[in-house]
Length: 238
Image (cartoon, rainbow, N blue to C red; front, side):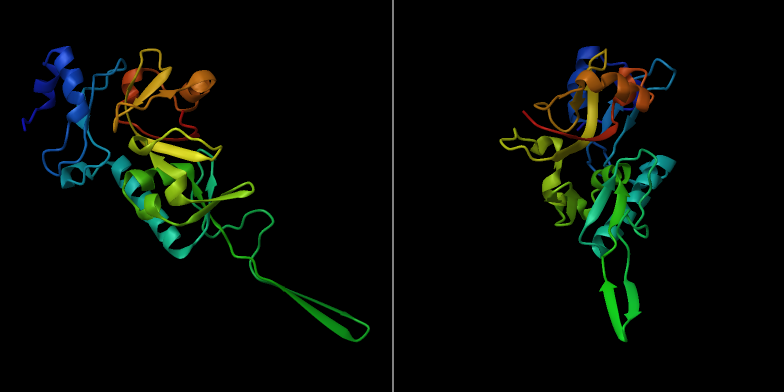
């Protein structure tokens, strides 16, 4: 194994860089890594990893935030057999909040004609977790990816271990079942119309008619800024 500094790596021929970028690992923990080229807005070239556990790579605010979110999700699924996903971009987990129409225990007592009726309603609170925290949990290797936790969508209920599919495990679907595909990005084409996962080479993600909305929502201005980014989305594999 040969170790590179960022300075040495970016001096390599372009073809060599493209070849090696598919097989980079952290020399300390051997986890998958990525190389991000210098961006058009001035960000310097760098190495990075979404999976690295080395001490020097765990101090960034983003890394600490992801670890906190993963820990929170782990705690929630340890205490709940069902969770709901919030698709609000800025949403936070709300294990203590009650979804509309669902409450905790209620005692309703009414008296009439010397008769007393007591109705007890016990409906279990369902924790709500943002999709962003779900992604951080999956990326950080929490137990969610292999969990039997139930996640309801409409009239259907899915186990987390079936609902969330990492890119290398994606297979063409023969039935109309919901799936969330997740992982990290290797790169995209220049016009950001097509995304390529870092974990495998046989899966591609066409943005289609959602391209402009996605770029605006996440303030994406150039393809280089996507390299190494974590991503999760609902879709079908063909």
